[in-house]
Image: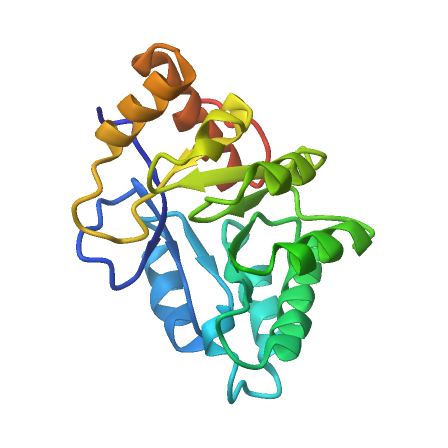
Length: 223
């Protein structure tokens, strides 16, 4: 079905279909290439928690300028990863990027690994949040899913069917490959529809419009 949009891939993903994949940057060195591709692909730029070492001192100004010059860009991939070093620095950089996403009214794509307690604390302390938030590769437990449910701007992007795929609201579901070969989005939607007990074509249409909304920074996009 041509309406499938991969909610998360990267500039070096093995298979990219123009217009059908949201390309995320992981580090500053990818920003210019991704911006060049943004005429063809929906795109996001940011600093991934794996790549926070040796950031230039002007990284904030550079990110802000790129967003100012490119109003369709989202902010991503950003986040927290307790499996990696410099966690306090991760928190600092993530929080700053979330504040930038708020200021520029952009969707944020978030990576979170074993840091949901801190993530929920940051979301709860922020005075404002981005207009849409993609929780990339989502597989958190029921307790965390319920805690995130108070935030109406959060979307949950799945690369496989996990229990949370049956818990989140239909109008917040996204699907992704994360650039991984072998993930078939059509099969993923079929499995999710079976889990939720709804028609596969209906769910595919819902997910398509959900993805259009996050690409449009939380706004309903007319076909």
